[in-house]
Length: 407
Image (cartoon, rainbow, N blue to C red):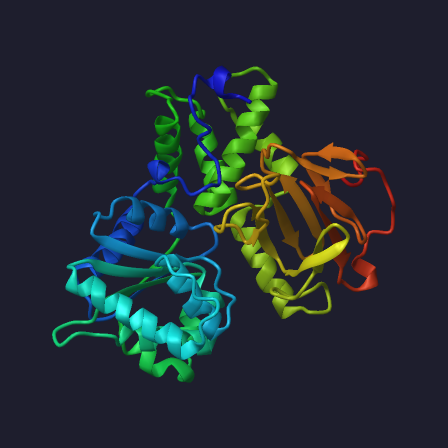
């Protein structure tokens, strides 16, 4: 990798939510303060929302790392659960093995545990990430849990974090009672242009830059123009640009490297990308609308399909840890292994500097344009891509992975 060339001791733009790399913009600092307030106030939920890649998970990891020893935490990342399975998952986080328990026993155990922790002087926090995926029934269970109290105060503090769809769900009629218990609600938007510069410099400094200017001054406006200040997009573009500079054996990332990275990623300007999605939504005859399924992936192990996932315009990050959009719990999968970038007219899979790589037709690839029926090997798993678009949007050619028409 490029660490030696740039004289760094860590990769500065990894996608993993590492608390030491957290850049506290004004908005991130405020969201973190809201989370911290749950320790001292028990009279309601705290809800933090933000777009994909805005830094919610990194904030949560930082918040958890700074908690005092007497705080007991249950952290839930898998949110597509039935009510009973969700309650069992909470108990597992508290050290129980509840899978033979029926719901009344699960609730009784939770009540007893929370009361015991309160008597012992411990604070209990329940943090739910990706909360936009919670069903209405599970959210109602969470509301009921929040009502467990002593004669003086409630005994469970709750933080809900998720994408903007969480706000839409909370505003529905079905959840009026839950919303009445929300004490603080904050939306984490993207970084400003100035904050994007500070964000890049901060991550480089943490990685060992020691004040050295690694990115040329004229690269920052372009980075912002193509990422919109979304931290995850900034990381992806900066890392790819550093690889370009590494290929030239240059220890400074120039505008030329940014251009090369953008060409490799096939990105358009952030605003144009947003406007294009809006125009497609208005003109359904020209291409699939925003949010419409473009394709599907079937994830198989040993010839048996274990997961099927729809692909809509956006980014799907695949890896071993729960913070990924698609988790593959296998030692052959890196923390953040690869990502699928879906646009209305194309779908691309990219390796995220994983240890074992991704393979198409037995050839290891860094980036590959997916065609209908393609099979990508990821560790011991196989992913088949199925194109759901109308025939006029399908690729008609069959080419090798290294062919310019595809990669």
